[in-house]
Each structure stands twice: as C-alpha cells, then as structure tokens.
Length: 519
Image (tube, rainbow, N blue to C red; front, top):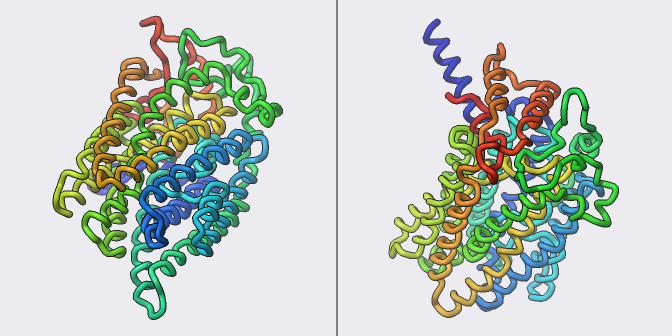
C-alpha cells in the first residue's frame, strides 16, 4: 500500500507539473483550438522546408527570394491588423473561418502557377508562411479565446500545450514534407517543381480542414459573453482590470466600459490608456526580438543548411524535424519552469541561451556540431512562448486581449519583414553567415532589455498562492470550477491593482510562481 500510494502521489505530481490535469478538464473548444494550431503548423512546417528551394528551382535569385518574404510579411501585417482588431466585433469564429479560406486560397495559387507576381499577390492577400512561423490572424484570436475560456491559474498549463502541439505540428510537417518530396521526385515523369507543388496542395487541404473544424466551436468562444460582465460593488471586479499597473497611469474606473460597439470605427481607442502604456513597453522589446527572428527565419535556416552541406531534401527534413521534435521536451516543462521562476525570469532563462546558439550557428565546419547547436536552440527557443502568452493575458483587460495580442503579433511580423530581404542580400554576396551572428546578438539585447524593464518590479500575489494551496488540498485534485476561480481572481485583482508602496515606480502583477503550489 505505501508503494502504491507513492506511485499515485508521483503520478499526481507529474500530472500537475505537466498540466495534464488542467488539460483533462479544458473542454471541447480548447481541444479544437489546439488541434487546429497543430494542423496549421504542420502545413507551415512542410511549406517552410521547400518554399525557398522551390523559388530557387523556379529560377528566382536570392535577392528576389528575400524580397518576396519581406513583402509577404508586410502584406500580412495589414491583413492581420484589420482582422484581429475587429475580430471581437465581427466574431472570432467568423474571423478564424475567413482566415482558413484565405489559407486554402493561397495554397491553390502556389500549387498552380510559377508567376512571381501572382505568387506574391497570393501570399500578401492570402495566408502563406514564408518563414515557418505563425502568420495571419489565427494566433492572436486563439490566444485571446483560450484566455477567455480558461481560468487565470490554469492558463500557463493550457498555453504550454498550445505551444507544444504547435512544435509537434511543425516537426511532423517537416518530416512528412521532406519524405514526400523525395518520394515524388523519384517517380517517373515527376520533376522537383511538381513535388514541391504537391506540398502546396497539402497546404490547401489543411486550410479546408481548419475551416470545417471552426464550425464546431461553440458560442462560448465569442467575447460578448464575458464582456457583458459588470463590476459587482459588493464582491469586487470580475477580471475587469489589468493585473499590471503603473502608479503614473490614469485611473482604471472607466476601463470596464463596453467597447465592442465602437471597435469597427476606433479599434485602437478600444484599448485603455494603462494598457497602451504596457503595450508600448512590451512592443519596444518584442521589436528587437522580431528583427532578429526575421533575419534568421526557419525557411532560410533550411536554405542555409541545404546550401552549406548539400543535403538531400529527405535528410534535411529529417534533421530539422528531429530538432523540432526534441524541442517539445523543453516546451512540456515550460509551465513548470514558469511556476518556479516566474514568467519574466523563465522567458529570459530560456531565450538568452537560444540566442547565443543562433549567433554561433555558422561557426562549426561540420554537420554534427551544427546539428547540436540547432537542437540546443530548438529546445530553448520556444520555451518562452507560453509564459509570454500567459503574461500578456494577465496584464490587459479581457475585452482588450484580442486587440492587444493582435497588435503584438502584428508588430512582431512587421519587425521581421525587413529581415529576409537583408539576409537575401547577404546570401547573394556570400555573407550568409553574417545574418545569424547579427540576429543572435539582437535577440540577446532583447533579453537584457526585458530584465532591465521588468526584473525586480514584478511582485508575487499573496492571494494567488493561497488559491493554489486550496486547489492542491482538493479531495481528488480536481480543477476548481469556473465560478470559484473567478471569485478568487476577483479578490486577487482587488488587491493587485494597487501600486506597490515599496517604491514609486514599481509594478504589481500576479506572478505565476504564485499560481501553483511549490513542490
């Protein structure tokens, strides 16, 4: 019996650490959103493996390839900006459905023509990922919806699995894409261009599947249900105030007013002044990170590896897939790390080493050491995504999340847009390696900036820790009901919105190191 009890306790502890208990009760909508992202990143991964090589096979120069990626990202900024800012008013499910159709349309054009202008227009107006990273309106709307559906104390777990399944999707897409290209090229009468176009037909099919999946999302995903909540004068606010506050920002008394009615005409005005101040500081940092990411996107890393080591497509796909698959190990434990270190320290502790590995990527002369650097970077690179998403969902008002997350993702895309063009110019002058050194250095500056702006100014919530203790003492360790969690969150926020009295410029935020028990 003691041994059995020990195994049971260990299993419960592991389930808590990995967020499995949270996911078990997350609900149908959460599962559909996460599965849809898995399929989307599967398609992005398959395309990222071949898109630069596909353009080279069509006879486009390195400069044209880089310019194409830059213009595609700029076009995505405009489309995503419009869609995410009006998504709550237009309807989140409708916006996701429209995005899925745009994705399918882009895939059809890429699979049907080799005209540079037609491909460029399809990529700008539609949804195609030239870098292998998230693109389009999907992520901002999905993250806002997940924050809407999941209680605060459980968001870190849900966002972790949201990232893990995305990484697995990219990994699967890479290996399937690389294997499919090799098999199709070996068939009689097939050229490499024909094989690449088959990948874009697969991309089209994924867009259609995503459209069907969107139809199964419930009305709970829409923002109106929570935006209609009002402040109870007896029990306090029900998540109507951001959890990060500067003493110098204006009063929050008017922040809970409904904003959807004016979202179509004044989308930026729907964001409160204190949230704009938070957004400004975060965007200034994300700009640096994204500039570095834009200079070394996943598709150009594939291009660099193929050019430097003359790898077959199947082998290249297998190597890149393996690095992404290994990275899921780190992502699974991202939530556990954030609970112990806190959101900001967890972001820096994982992102800074990955930036250093990126800067060192061109140094090894052999394939083995290069793969080691790729694996090391992949394991750590995306571990900051779940803490970052959880942090953003905490520090802005619920009705502002879609717009704020959309603006953040759009700024990141805009910042990335000039990177591929610069890298293309460097590659055309036999200076491909310079792009990785500069990119890694810029991303490291982002990490130090994050520490400079937020380290020591984030304080743990006493009530948040009490909430987790109560959850751990539950008879079967079940996740607290939505009503109980919201009641506790309201009590936390009533205390958290007050500026810290320790210093005139310190900030107060519910740190995730206090939202789960310390093991």
